[in-house]
Image 1 (cartoon, rainbow, N blue to C red):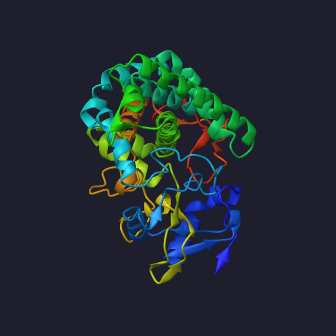
Image 2: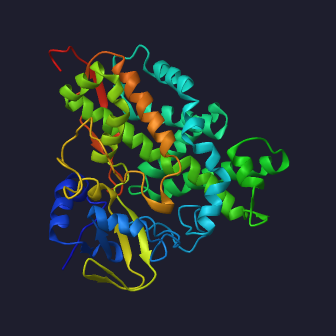
Length: 391
């Protein structure tokens, strides 16, 4: 049985948790007639199976990793829209920059950035005042790009993601500007190599030869965009939760050793990337349901991460949850390359806000949900200081 489940509808965006519960209970596969039709995979074990089988559930269909699809008929966006073995070769070029020890070496500098962003603020609009600039600065440190360029990345990211539903022509223009910026970086690194990520993309060898221009450009663009919005959303939803739940806020204030596990739990409960797409390359049976060759599939991470078959008290935030096997960073070959960067940003941003006074949501500025249901976050979220008794 099919339904018209449109991820960009207000009903989907605001009601996704109840919807995912209903779909999980109904069966392993749900069908939507929206946007040309697609299947939704909502149970944890089924999502995990899909992610571990890229030969059957492929990402190598440009534009179809997004559901609804984006522009098709273009070169694949490396490495998101590339399957093994080429995917693994591409990632290996830059993976050394994203290991935990390398990323965490920037912890002290990023903490100072967070403190500076929060200084002398009576209120805080989390997205614009903290999350976007903090994520951009973290990327600048990891990618060894000029920090002064971060403002441009913020503008491009906002126009690409915030307007892709309401004003796609603005999003396309911002995408073109970003591509030109990355192309210039790659050209510069080919002429003047240095020890950084863009040089690895520009002159690094795969199977004895360099990446094509399209591969390097796509990968460079992905590094500046793909994890940025998800990390912004992760930090924003985490702070919104703590503003709404004074008990959890006070617990973290009293015991900062909980913060690493709390970050993992907040990512599970408010999974920033609600779903991504795959396309079946053969007829495949999933839990007794046939998915024909060429089926567009929405792999619902946000639903899997609230599956009570796997997580006790799945709908609750349990700050000290152990053995947290969440899928917020994906799983398998396409697991998020920047997971350690995201973790560092969330730990740093949350800790900096907790160093200040108790906080709550500013009721004069209602939360603004993002309009696209493939992600989970807010366009704006304003926090204000409050007394402990008021919290």
